Image (cartoon, rainbow, N blue to C red; front, side):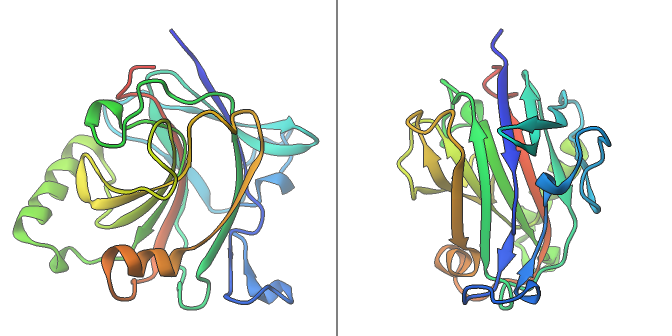
Length: 229
């Protein structure tokens, strides 16, 4: 049985359109590098995100490469860490983060339920009313929540995939309400700290059309349950 071991670190998470000139221009969402591994306490406002009937990924704060990071260990499991923040993308449209993975998932596949696993991913969940969904979508979500627990009504998901090209945008195989953006792919950058900056507001407009409602939650996640790896 393979063990997938990942490391996360988040600095300034969301910023304004222009380069920040003061602390007021930065809205930190997860400054894990400012935590202490000895305290074993996540940044204020962060908690575990778990799903019914699925084993949990193990998250811990560790020292890595001279700083505190979140380490995720996953073995046929899926869970995440979430902060429930309300964020207006008109004011804070840009997201920055750093992550690192020790391996990719051989059987990962963005187009199938059996391959819907990723060594690292970031979920952005939106404050989107069930009333705005179709009858079929509402019933899909209700059924999913009975089985799995928390399921967003609409979300963007930035992922590190195994085979798809960077920039690929695809519906999650479990629900068309979650769109996945391949921000990193393959094993070329395995073992390296990778830093990203994306304009979430522009991505939302390109994918869904129109302006988004506020973000209501941000989650990081490592999962290997579907690929049983």
